[in-house]
Length: 213
Image (cartoon, rainbow, N blue to C red; front, side):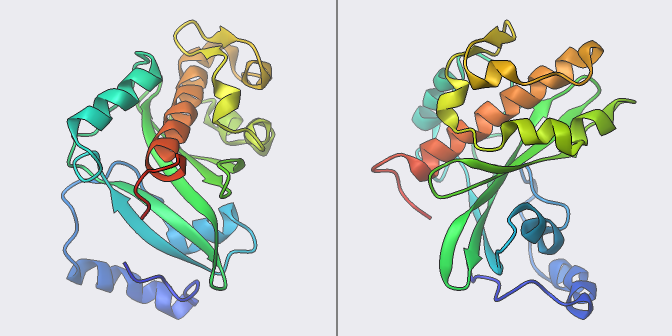
């Protein structure tokens, strides 16, 4: 796809809905930002443009890859999209240089679906955490900067020593504080979503020998 040359002005933002109406869209999308022209620079300070990439299990290896990812998740409950439903990836640039990615996934929460995004540098390190959707009276506790800041700097390796079924383990992830003890389902849902997010990114974009977008 063509890279967006920069973040749109207010005038251009008003025109975006018309462009979207005129462009055929997939019937369903796994998880995407509500307002990319605003969200991308907020989640990736210093970026100047971004490119939207879509990928799916159907286009990246099909059922065998899907089963491998499920295996890597270790049987953790998750909301899986059908094989042909695309995931949305935001490839982020500073000038002409690619500097990272923003990617989100859906995960079952206590009162509905959680939409969990991270921005990642080119080494797969978390730069920002964004919980776009969460329900419940405690939602602001999970969307607070204090909670999200605990994940900054983590990589997939930090998730390897944690049991996402039992909700305990060792390593850096085990030190993350649940801001709402009575919302354990949402807390574990966030951790599971982050793990799934990083595994998908590793599988499709970071691991050596994988097809690049």
